Image 1 (cartoon, rainbow, N blue to C red):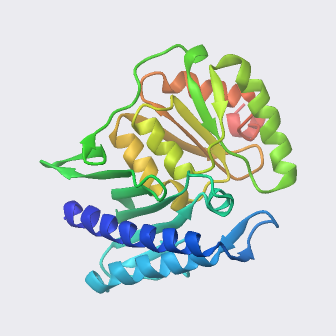
Image 2 (cartoon, rainbow, N blue to C red):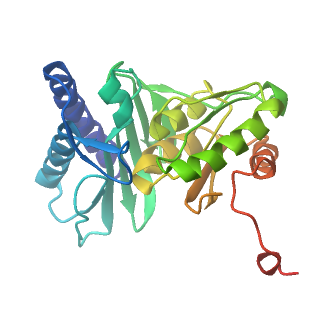
Image 3 (cartoon, rainbow, N blue to C red):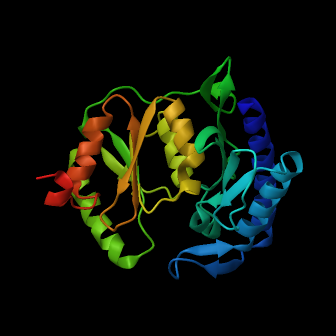
Length: 272
């Protein structure tokens, strides 16, 4: 069954990517803002999500949907599709080649298949069932996380909130982490950052302010490729996501906490 989900997600992602490329060629139109005046939604976001939902619904009319740009839809099958039509919308607006269609299929709340498709390059990351177990693929070939390395040799990606006050706190945390790692990258797409951990192009990723549609597919792909993902509460009070190869993950996570990315733990929370 998860083969069917992966195939359907990939079909819908390819159709959405074609639509997005066409809209980009015609010029990007900002439709609205969300959490701040720099957190944008384009007409292409909305059109692509509608296309994805319609494509999936035509095959599976009773499934549920959770999407960034559309209303949640209840279902009766236990299957829910989690959709981000353009992860990296600001990159899309500016013409930076790092934005993706992200689609995950959940069964009873657990992700079982995922697709992240880089719209510009056409690179396809997929987590799907093969011979009875999940595999992570890039353009049809198996991928895995980067090998072991000391923290000082790890390349880490991050991102920042659209809330200006929270950005200040996150920037301070990033400046404290930076001396302890090889370098930081800010690429602008949670889904693709997770896939870059999956294929060994990055040693880790940390970002506060992510939503389920940002990381449902990419997180599954990363975990399937040998990474660990962990959710917590960030210094700005929003969801904090840390991802890295399972080997050495605890060291990375501790460095992220020590740098101040997470919300402070009170004495009561520590149980003292």
